[in-house]
Length: 223
Length: 367
Ligand SMILES: Nc1ncnc2c1ncn2[C@@H]1O[C@H](COP(=O)(O)OP(=O)(O)O)[C@@H](O)[C@H]1O
Ligand SMILES: [Mg+2]
View 1 (tube, chains in turn green, purple):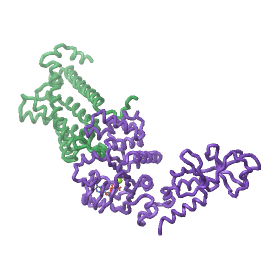
View 2 (cartoon, helix red, strand yellow):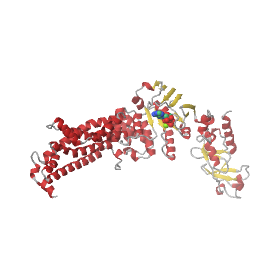
View 3 (cartoon, protein in one colour):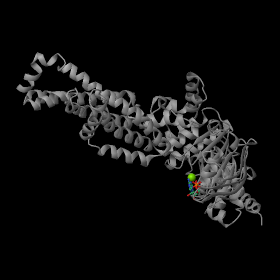
View 4 (tube, chains in turn yellow, red):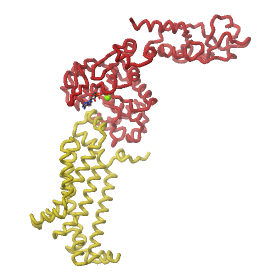
C-alpha cells in the first residue's frame, strides 16, 4: 500500500515527459492505433469469410500461426531490422496479436447463425449484402464484440513491451522501476495497466448493452 | 398460375431430388405437395422462388420463366413460410412482419400500419407487436411467419411444413386460421407437408410425390380418397380412407324426416301409439333436448318429464356426411338430428336415410 502511495502521491510522477499523463497517452496511442489497424484487417476479412464460407481454413491456420508468434521476440527482431525512431516496430506485433481473436470470433459468429434464419432472409428477398448487414451481423454481434474485447485487452496489456525497446507507454514505469530497483514505480505501472484493462472491459460491456438488440441478448424488455 | 414443365433437379452429388415433374398450380387455390420424407417436396417448392435452381425444365409463373427474373426481385413478390418461422431475433415482431415492405421501400409508417393490420388478421394480440421473437411461443411465431409472408400482399404463398413443429392443438387452430384467411384472400398457395391428413384438410388439390421426386397422383381430396392411382398412394393414404372420404360428401343428399320431432310440452298419450321406437324431443324454440324411447314412456305427463337419451346433431348444409354419421353414432337411437345454423332442429336423419346416402357414396367409387 505504501508503495502505491509513494508512487501515486509523488507530484513528480504526474508531470513532465516521464509523467503518468504522457505515458498514459503514449500507451493509448500504441494500443489505439494497433487495434484500429487490426480491426481494419480482421473485420472485413472475418465478415467475408463468415458470409461466403470461402477461405475459412486459411483464416484459421493463419490466425493460429499469428497466435504462436512471441510478441517480444517479434518486437526485438523488427527493431533490429528497422531501428527505433518510429512507433511502427511496436505496432506490428500488437496488430499480429489483435487480428486472430477479431477474425476468428467474427467468422465463428457469422457461421453460428441459425441456417434457417439465413434461409428465411434470402427467401424474403434480401440480397447477399442485406442478409449480411441486416441479419447476420446484428445476430452475430455479441461474438464479434467479444473478439474485439479480447483483442483490446490483450493489446492494452501487451503494449507494455514497447518499453523494452526504448519506447514509451506505461511499460516504462515497470521496466525503469525494475532496472533501478524502484519497486513502487514498477508496481504503480502494473496497477495502471491493470486499471486500463478494467476500463476497456467495462467500456465493452457498455457498448454491448447499447449495440446488441435485446432480442439477441434475450433481455426481457419491460412491459 | 404456376406451371412446372418437365422439371428435374439433380444435386451436385448426383441425387435426383425431383424427376421430370410436370404439374399446374391453379391461381387462387391451395395445392399441397405431400409425400414421405426425402421425396423432393422442399426441393420442388424452393425451385419456385429460386432458392434452388432447376437443373432441367421450366417453372412458369403466370407464363414467365422464373429463371428470367432476378431472385431477390422474384422472392419479394412471393410469400415464403418455413417450419421454424425463421423470424429475425433482433427485430421486434412488427418490424419482422414489415420486412418485405421495408425492402420494397414503403415509408415506415405505412409499412408498420400494414404490419399491425396483418398481426390482427392472423389472430395475434397487438401487444405482441413490440416484443421480440424469443418472447413468443412456437405457435405465435408461426402466425408471425404467416403475417410476414403476407405483408406485401404477394399473389403467391409458399409454405414448407409451416405447422409441423407445433403441438397438435395449436396445429389445428393454425390450419383453421389458414383456411379462414384463404377464404378472404384467395392466394395461390403451394403448401408442403408430410402429413396426409393435413394435406387432405387444407388442399383444394393434392399432389402426392413418391421418393425420387416423381408425381404419383394429383387430384382433389375426395378423388384421391376414392380412387388412389396405385398401391403407393393407397398405402400413403393409410387406414380409414373410406370414412375420411365422407368428410367431402355433402349432407345434402341425406333424406330428413320432420315427423320424428316432438315438442317437450306434448302429452305422453299423444305419441304413445306411434310405430317409431325413438322420437327427438325439442324445446319451445325447436332446439333438441334428447331422444325419448317410446316403449319406456311413463303412463302420464308431458315429454318434458321423460328421461331423455343423449343425442348428436349436425348442421344441415354445412357439415358433411361424416358429421351426420358421427352424430348418429352418439345416440342410442342411431339417428342424427339435423339443425340449422342457429341450432334449431330441421329434422332427423334416420339409420335408413344414412344407409341410403352411404350406399350412394360407395356406388360413386366406381368399379
Ligand atoms: N443440397 C442437397 N444436396 C444433395 N442432396 C440433397 C440436397 N438437398 C436435398 N437433397 C436430397 O434430395 C432429396 C429430396 O430432398 P427434399 O426436397 O428436402 O425432400 P422433402 O422435403 O420431401 O423431405 C433427398 O434425398 C435429399 O437427401
Ligand atoms: Mg422438406
